[in-house]
Image (cartoon, rainbow, N blue to C red; front, side, top):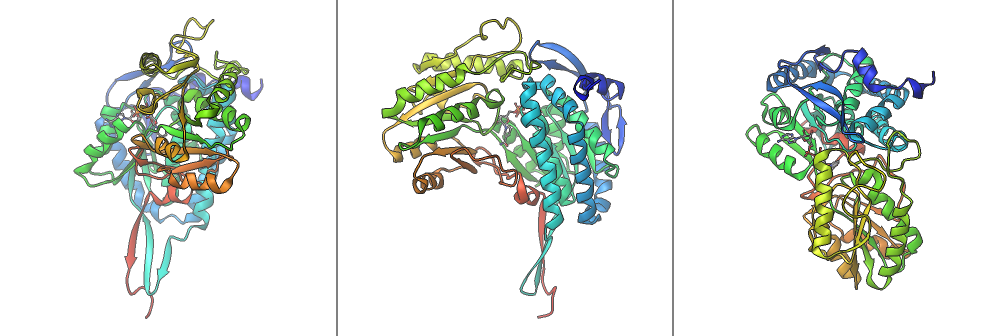
Length: 491
Ligand code: NAD
């Protein structure tokens, strides 16, 4: 049997007895209630497993376990923490197929995409955290004062379902690198990859209690973490709605709150751009992961005089997508990940039509030939006005809006015309102008002419996209306090 044939995450987790357990203090234990939640395969809407849900009481136990582990872990030499993280990285690579199958099952990613992006990019966060830790100067001198960076303490980490493993490693790896101990609450909609990740951390030999897993719902486990007096920091990746609720709950305990929230990212195509190179990859980037990426460039902002050409290339690109069974190797786009999201996408496509935007391709309903499952039609609207709901609200599905501009000032104004400020793209031939436009966009990360992904580039939001930074050195520094020790050196 090949690794691929053997990789059945459901059978694996069942055999290991993980579905009714959470990981607390190094032990896979039964939660304190018998509440359960289904894991639904969005390509069939069938329940493929059930997981046990933790409660607020379980959060107390997990926070206590993380607190007990903190003194020793925070004092563990950086080189040893880096060694253990490298072991986690190695195990992710060794179990990549199992993880890819789990992600495909729980949130519908096309298996080819799960293998090529979801898993390897997730592994990169762990590799980068280990690498940065090995060379990080936790103490720096400023005159006779020492500036010391120390781990903030016990961290509650709350993650979404869209890039389930990637969002977990983007938080867990830098937090552990910093010397913090953690309680992870993954999305209750995508718990399979989280259970496999917890198993990996356990097998890598991290000391008991350094990493704890509490599966559960946002209103129960997420809320319990947010207001918990024994937790020093919360980092959440999710919707702006959930980020606001977490911030309010966390306020009474004055804990640090790092928010990685929604987006409606612009892709500004400048008048001198080569449209064949600018439009196709922009459409692909918008529809990657079925449009379920927080920084997906969902607003293509194009010169009005070239609108017809843009529409032609965009529609031709979307026509090449293969929407279907996520386990089929030829599929490029699987279903939308859950029913709530499917209904939201349908509603927003209907809204675009009602608002009078021009439908270039797609529309409401399922693609032809797909009778069941949460499949949506890749949809492109043109002649979109920036004030329309489809240009303002995060849809989080396979929907692109094309907005025309007359001047570069207007293009920049449209790019900045939402409550969000997460990612942006700029395309053009004159690099001086491309850089100038990038400098005027109010957001945390800008991509010029589709560069390769850089896991060392800090990522995060301006405005209501959040206040945190993940990835790279800045991602680890999120989890550090700053202590200055005056008189540290002789004057
Ligand atoms: P969501 O907000 O519904 O859930 C995210 C997480 O928050 C889940 O674990 C959920 O259980 C938890 N949660 C929900 N309500 C909570 C509460 N009251 N208290 C504490 N926790 C709570 O988001 P989602 O649907 O899972 O993910 C999609 C959203 O995530 C999109 O808005 C997307 O833009 C955003 N996102 C942002 C980034 C980023 O880095 N900025 C990355 C990926 C996704």
